[in-house]
Amino acid sequence: MNKNFLEVKNVDFSVDGKNKVNNVSFSIKKEGDVVCLLGPSGIGKTTILRTIAGLEKINNGSIELNNKILSSKKINIDPENRNISLAFQENSLFPHYTIEKNILLGAERNKYKKEKKISLKEIINLLDIAHILNKYPHQVSAGEAQRASLARSLVSEPDLLLLDEPLSNVDQSFKEEIQVRLKQLIKDAKITTIIVTHDSYEAFYLGDYCGIILNQELKQFDKPYNVYHFPNSIEVVNFLNRGILIPAKVTSPKSLENSDLGTITGNFIKPYPIGTDVKLLIQPEDLEHDDRSNLKLDVTDKKFRGSNFIYTLKTSSDLLIPVFVHSHHIHQHEINDKFGIKKPIHIEHLVCF
Image (cartoon, rainbow, N blue to C red):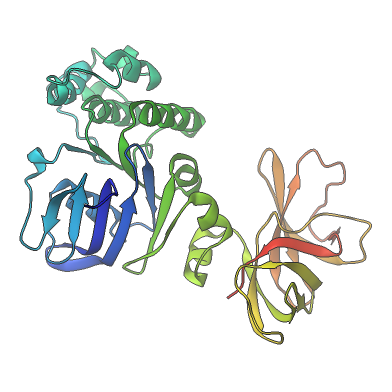
């Protein structure tokens, strides 16, 4: 028997016979885990959710939930018999019902359960929608409607919860708080969840695992820390946009050389023969600021991010390298200033391609 709670095996996800994502395989090991799927718009993330929910059929591979085949070439369990809840990105509330009545429709699905994992009152309070219960969908904001739709899905206590950009309409000032509350709800109720999002920070916070979908393929599926620090391809590096690849030559089992930065030491993620030319990933937190250093780079851009500045530094060979500096740092630099980089440069994990 399959020990994973959800198993997607070699599935081509398609709409109207046109493949969106090919030969996808991933699993959710235990009940209550959260998977976040990241990728550009139109890549097929929503199609994956629709197919798992039973709204689209598959022609190869299989989808199994709790050791039961939901979809295969020969089997397709109807959506209403899957106990899966899909919350769409768009407002899917019934316009002629109040917000409360819309949410209670979700509660109908689990009314025969003897033990409720989470109460309706708790969901309403945590999503901060008590003040709109007597209103109709056209009377609330897009963000409030989205939270109400999310509440309806949560209160149904499905075996699998599918969320399509669940916080895309929530005000930025409130989004982080709602992320915390949503994570608490899902974990307390142990609701296994797949979340589609374009926000990598949201995915890294909410997900136990993250999948990166690019060019009709699932390029990487791993824990968020590993996706960020150990991307498995240049495509993933470029999509995450969290650093730059610089040319370097391997000079020892623990070092390499770049013509602009000099010697860089660390631990290679995979071994390379000495003398190999590689592209080394430099992320913004890898280099340290030190104005006493004789390694000076030119400041070409400066972004204030509240707790930190992100400086863009140009090397003598015109590489543009991002560097984080804490915003309380007393020696701030302006564009065209010289910016010192601490030497020797040591990066704990050397990710090369």
